[in-house]
Every structure is written in C-alpha cells, then in structure tokens.
Image (cartoon, rainbow, N blue to C red):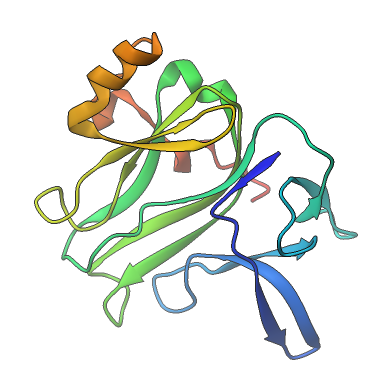
Length: 188
C-alpha cells in the first residue's frame, strides 16, 4: 500500500530504542498509541504485519493497491470542540481502523480534543475531516484517496469535485456520516 502521512520517529523506551508511528498524546484525558515501524523510513510501500504479541506493526511491502494512512482531527485549541474523521456510509467497507489515539487540550484534557487513526484505505474512498477548533477557526475538508495521490478538497468545492470525477456527492452532514471511532474494533 502507498503511504500517507506515515512519519516514524525513533522513540527511546526504558528497554531500548525503536522506530514507531505515534498516534494521540500521553497524559490525562489522552491516549497515546505506538505502532512499531519495521521498514526503511523512506519505503514507498507499506503494509500491516503482526508482532509476536499479535499487535499491528508497519512493515515494507512490494507495490500494491490501497493506502496506509494516518488521518487526524487535530486542529486548534478551542473549548468544547472535538476533531475526528468520518466516512460516507456507502464507503465504510473501504476502510479499516488499525490503531487509534486521542489528543486533548488543557492540563486535565477536558477543554477539547481530537482523534487520530492509522487506517488502511481502498482507492476511490472519501473521508471528511472535522478538525478541532470549530468551523469558524479551521475549515472542514475532504480527503480523496485516488490511485496515485491523496487530494484535499475544501467542503465548498466538494460538489464541483464530484462532478469532475463522476462520483456521487456524499452526505455533508456529520450525522449522516460514520465516525471512524465507530469502526474501532475491540482489539484496538
């Protein structure tokens, strides 16, 4: 799978160092998740493997279809706003949540927050991102996972984009979309 926003870092643990992809944050009202990264940092194609303990890890792969992506609802510090990512109901089968984390604002993590996801995505899938901060501060937008690239589309241009691509316009209201948090399996 092609990669999108997969940025591994070297993290030092008590037992040694390891390259990981970090989702969310550590602290009160937060959930930090580490996904081991066992591939060259510049590998163009990645896939999900399984560690000895049965947890997901990222490994290099030969060229293949689909995307391995980190998508996030992170935005700006604003009280009572929660950022997340949504998928149209007709495309739910095109996405799988591998791991997730949660970030938050304020010392107690109660001001607002956001969700962050490691997902596999099939080509031709749309995701709607609602960044934390409120639409008056930071705009909502769509991501379209094409065969070769991930295209960012402002909400105001979505109908034009769908007409150009010859695809059906997805629902705009968040209540009509599926939050990726609803797709998290109990094993995550």
